Length: 94
Image (cartoon, rainbow, N blue to C red; front, side, top):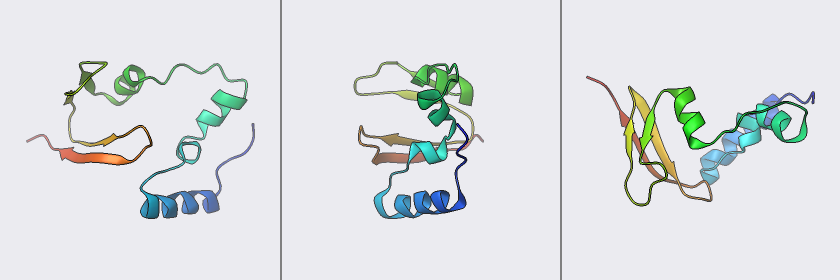
């Protein structure tokens, strides 16, 4: 698919985030479009794959009430199932 994200779409996505605190994942990650509607052979994007790609660990997985996140100089956001941010924090290594 040849439909690159335009500046207008990025600006609209950023404006919506300011008002609604949620984003369009297809604007932030245009590669998802090819995975869903294209012919790309895409790998899974479960939490384990995402964690490995970004160099952090989340345990236990799956979690029920408590999780531990190990990372270096990272910003952490926890979102509910609707995409609303419910916890936000930052960890700096000393």
